[in-house]
Amino acid sequence: MVYVTSWDEFVGRSVQLYKADPQSTRYCMKYRHCDGKLVLKVTDNKE
Image (tube, rainbow, N blue to C red; front, side, top):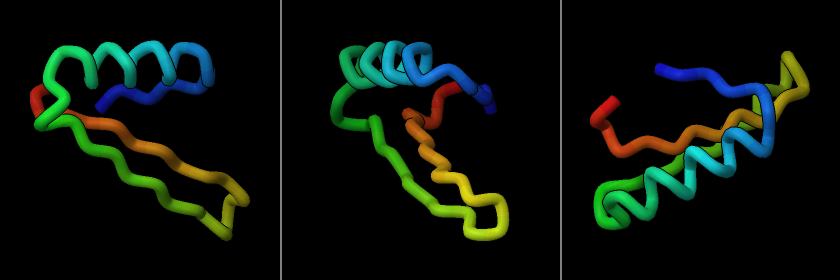
């Protein structure tokens, strides 16, 4: 799993994954109350 801390890099990689295979790309959003963070995951289950 690749962790990205920069929003611009995350958006770029997400768009790249979606353009490569829109049918298998999925995302998950989770709020971690203990950390006060919103965690976003985008995957195509290939990397």
